[in-house]
Length: 277
Image 1 (cartoon, rainbow, N blue to C red):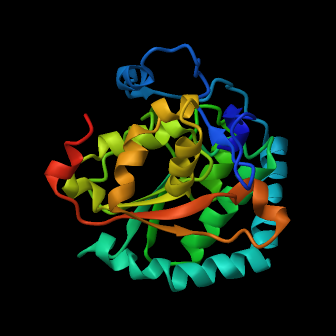
Image 2 (cartoon, rainbow, N blue to C red):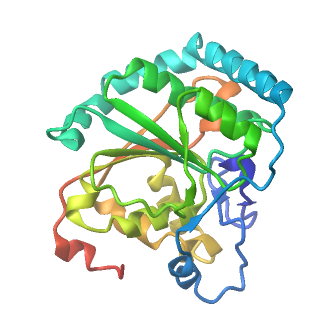
């Protein structure tokens, strides 16, 4: 997420509020065709680069996560978040579930929960959602920077750590919630591209960066490098129902600002053909 990604702020193109665009870690502004780069990424086996286990570090990190979960659980921010889910968001959930009773949660780009505060807060929200909403099923997590220690703590919290780097290309063959606050623009487009079919889009819930904010940024900054990375995001705007969250407190701004729920309304195949997949 934000802690594990490079960001770009275009000082020559401002809005009423500062807005940061999250770009690929490996991005280069001189790349001629970033979309081609995305297509070249293949799913590949993955394991943490470090191999040392440290029970002391694991205990300390588990205690840290427990403190963060408790902090958010008792905050006005989570009360507002939960109330919004139980009202505005819940209107869309049955349509995604269909005949299923639960949907899997896939967390991409969590970042380092050991080194940075925002990933801890983001993961805490996911853990509380799993506890409080009976339509959330199993949770899978992936970020290429996850350490052995973090992997063990994630598993102790009830998550499964992926052994494959999917590059965000999971097909939603069944109802799936993708939890991706502050991920890179490239990752959102990878996900949309992999699911660029009516029967797959209808199975998706996406919690992540506001698509509307991407569109506003591109409309104001037509020379911004991000406009070449968000084609599928912009194309999806016409059939996306977006529900913005309220951060309420500055304590949670860095972890959740400009985050929204995204639901994809029925769309015809011809509409999806307007952009190459």
